[in-house]
Amino acid sequence: MCGIIGYIGAGEALPFLLKGLEKMEYRGYDSSGVAVVSENKIKVYKKCGRLKELENALKNEELLECSAGIGHTRWATHGKPSDINSHPHTSKSGKISVVHNGIIENYISLKNFLTQEGYKFISDTDTEVIAQLIDFYYNGDLLDSVQKAVSRLEGSYALGILCSDEPDKIIAVKKDSPLIIGTGENENYIASDVMALLLRTRKIYRLQENNIAVIKKDSITVYNPAKKVLNSENDFEFVNWDIESTNKGNYEHFMMKEIMEQPTVISKTVSSRIKNGEIYFDDFDIADEYLKNLSKIYIVACGSAANAGVVGKYIMEKLIKIPVEVELASEFRYKTPLIDESTLLIVISQSGETADSLAALREAKRLGAKVLSIVNVKGSSIANESDYVIYTSAGPEIAVATTKAYSCQLCILYLLSLFIANKLNRISSDKLYECINKISSISDKIEEVLSKKDEIMEIAKKYKDTEYAFFIGRNLDYAVCMEGSLKLKEVSYIHSEAYAAGELKHGPISLIENGTLVLALLTQDKLFDKMISNLREVKARGAKIFAITTDIHKDKISQIAESVFYIPDFSNEFSPSLSVIPFQIFSYYSALLRNCDIDKPRNLAKSVTVE
Ligand code: G6P
Image (cartoon, helix red, strand yellow):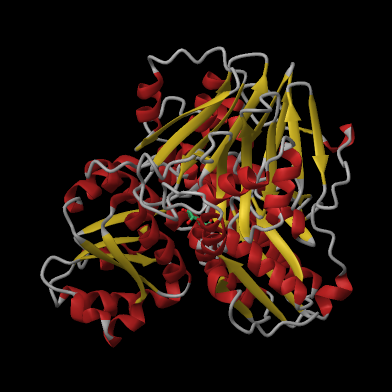
């Protein structure tokens, strides 16, 4: 949510800033801006709309000589998207310019204070307060004034700060929002995401909580809140990500590229954890004694990660036989969770930076639980603060709507369930062996589904003008329907809701009328006939049914559904990995046919670092 970038060096600041912003546009895309310092003056350019608006506005500017600058791509929180509310924000004296990712919770009282001191504000943002506050304290020492200003801020903030009187440096600050420093040849950088730095450097330093860095072209000095200098060469790390994976390749959209990558990334996620028919978690060294005393598992997450958690709950309760509760992180953090040392909290997050998930993690730790996170981004805040981390190997995911990271999360949840069930002797060795074999074959089975993606495109054509849809299923199918429904509404803007099929008649069925689209998932053999009854109920009320099931049910389903997509007959437990794929593809084509901005759906951002 919002991406910040900064450059200081001998070269050209502006091209670097724009390239970096392009890589981070997924973090927010309602406006963007840059500030560069040239001849002791800060010049600011900002534009409402996509990054290309800013690029067009800058075409005729001769800024190539600027050797220091900061930039921002915004997801509006305070104040609507507009040129004025876009970042960077500059103090009234024109000396201090700031880009910010996060929220300043006490900005109103700071604004009142600064107004009394004669400061005037031109935007509706919380960020403008930071620029003015630093300006208020500025007496020729930028670091000192930043330290003083930051001590008065409440909330979350990753900041990049530029000062016209000290053009040889940018200052970076981090609290509860990600910030990475990169180091290059006679130039250094900051960014919210490693991806923005990869074109120039792979040597990075992750700024830790509450620390401040003074970044010059040939030095990086990090201070802790007690103003002690911290960094050493040992704290730098090398990132070995493949730059190609941050490009679209031959695909029109990242979403389809990432859907198609699923067999590969699942195979990577799974294969390294299965050796000689056994499950290993090298990254997860949990004591057997702790597992034996486990009385409850909480799964906490947001969005699709929470939907993966619901799949996890069904499977864990079945295999481990321990109560599992799935909570949205935004709810968990403000309720009274019943947690003690015998509770394991599992946080699931692609980005590892989601503000609510991070806050839930901290709350659970405070209450004494151990925290295991399932995270895609190495070194992210959630990974750093967890007792145990299991990484998914989805690689960089760029489309805002997640596909491959969700699928990898499912596989980790399966493996983890089996691993714990085995440790607690709750699964027979035959069943364990059978499950491991099934999980090992998921990628091949997904390939089969992907090879029929054109069939789904044809089905999407039939329903592209639908205004609302219901997803129904039972048990694990219901859990997958939650993700299918989220996917469809996120990218195609078709209003959709997921219901447990048995619940439909307790209210929602009143919305079914002639032509209502119902997407039904039927992979759970024991529940197949129950589902057929539910489908008859909606069909009797005029619904059009698009069903996803396996070949073995062909006869029955073809009598009732208008459209059917068959997935391979695979396994009742691990069917979510296959059944979610047609939903992803259906959502993609529905969005494409409705001319939606697939990779950057309206109002969304991929990494939500504010509450
Ligand atoms: C945002 C994204 C969703 C994602 C959710 C959780 O809302 O748009 O796609 O599922 O955040 O993100 P996380 O990075 O924690 O998995």
